[in-house]
Every structure is written in C-alpha cells, then in structure tokens.
Length: 252
Ligand SMILES: NC(=O)c1ccc[n+]([C@@H]2O[C@H](COP(=O)([O-])OP(=O)(O)OC[C@H]3O[C@@H](n4cnc5c(N)ncnc54)[C@H](OP(=O)(O)O)[C@@H]3O)[C@@H](O)[C@H]2O)c1
Image (tube, rainbow, N blue to C red):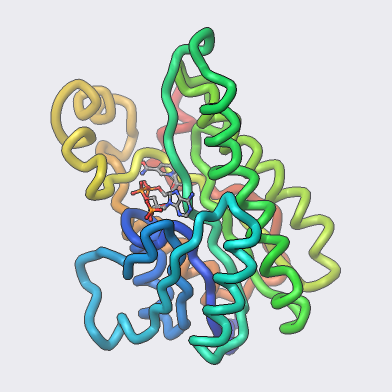
C-alpha cells in the first residue's frame, strides 16, 4: 500500500453544509487545500472546524449546473489557493419527490441538471487541470437509491443512476490518462437539514427496522470515506460504486 504524497487543492461542490462540509473538513484535516463551492458561497458550516483548518478552505459562489460558473470558480480557486487542482468531489445535489404521474417536465430537468449534468460539466472543467498533473481522482456522490425502486422518487433515483453510469464511462475513458473516477453511494445520512426527520416520527421507526446497522449514518462517515480515497493512492481502483449504507440496500 502506498499513501499519496501528492498534495494540492481538491474542489468539493456543495461544501457549505451537510455531507459536503464533512468532506471539506476531512480533506483539510488530511492537509489538502479545498475549494468549497455552493450557490451561497458560504464557508463549510460544521462542528469541528478550527481557524487553523479553515485556512485550508477557499470558498466560492457557483451554481454547478452552469458550466461558465464552474470554469470561473475553478480558475479562481486555483489562483487563490496557489496550488494545483488535483481532485474533485461532485457532491452538490438536490432532492425531489412526487408521484410519477405528477412529475413536471421542468422539475425533472432541473434536478437532472443539478444532480447529473453538473457531474459531467464539473468533470470536464477539472480535466485539463488533472491532465497537467498527469492524473488525479474524481469522487462522485451518488446514492443507494441508484439501484432501488423507490415510490415517489423516480426523478432523484434516475439522477443517481446516471451518476453511477457516468462514473463508469469516465473511468474507462480517462484511465489511460491516470484519472480515476469513483462513485460513493450513501444510504440515509443525518445532516442538520434532515436530522430531526430521521431521528423522530414514522421515518425513524422505519429506519430502525430497515437499516441492519440500526441507525442512519453521519455526514462524517461519508467525509472520512471520501478523504481516505484521496489519501490512499490506489491506482487500480476506478469506475466502482462504493455503497455506504449500513447494509440497507442489500437487505432482503
Ligand atoms: N443526506 C442523505 O441522506 C443523502 C443520502 C444519499 C445521498 N446523498 C447525496 O449527498 C449529497 C449531499 O447531500 P446533503 O444531504 O449533504 O445535502 P444538503 O445538506 O442539502 O447540502 C447540499 C449542498 O449542495 C449545495 N447545492 C445545492 N444546489 C447547488 C447548486 N445548484 N450549485 C452548487 N451547490 C449547490 C448546497 O448549498 P447552496 O444551497 O448554498 O447552493 C449545499 O452546500 C447530494 O448529492 C445528495 O443527493 C445524501
């Protein structure tokens, strides 16, 4: 096993809160500079952030579904951090819920844009930077819903299945360039946004029965896994979807 000696700057989309903030924290703790993108442009809001760690963060406003904003934000972060862009975490995502017969065209296209098209657009934007560094790692954040049939979740499930497919296609095309692409697919994860809903009420009862490990994950679980993928330089590992769901998705 070799650990990566390569430091530099890793862009994390949707880093202002939730899972993205936990990834930004983990990468900063591992010594990377982190470009933290979100529409608000806020610094990651997360417990455990010290002023010392916050020096690793370079926040910028960017709507990931807008390629011209991605290009400007990546260039701005490379310049402000003074470090080469060596990786990307496509984490930004939105949720959508509706019965199949009621899904509106515009809603479907909007969620597809933010959750799926942005993965392609941001990966295309980082590509020349990674080529310059003779390789790098892109980690997409999918969902265990990518392989499930979930009532009232057609749109969200379709976007996350697309993320898994894009991961595989990018991995095979870019492997000869030394660029690896992985898909981390979480199950239910508690963030500030959904913590109450996951811990109390009917969803809490359902999850206690359905998740073999007994509880939903924490954003930190995903942050630690994604950070370890960057720290552990594993050249043969690419294209794969890694499920992190307490075995929820495989329960019969
Ligand atoms: N939480 C879960 O249970 C769970 C489970 C499986 C997968 N996931 C996936 O994990 C990822 C993060 O989820 P989360 O629960 O941490 O979500 P969250 O708490 O709602 O945070 C979403 C982040 O994305 C940013 N964002 C949203 N739309 C954006 C856009 N168009 N451009 C740039 N940034 C945007 C938000 O900031 P702004 O609002 O400022 O833009 C925020 O930083 C998503 O891809 C989600 O599908 C989550």
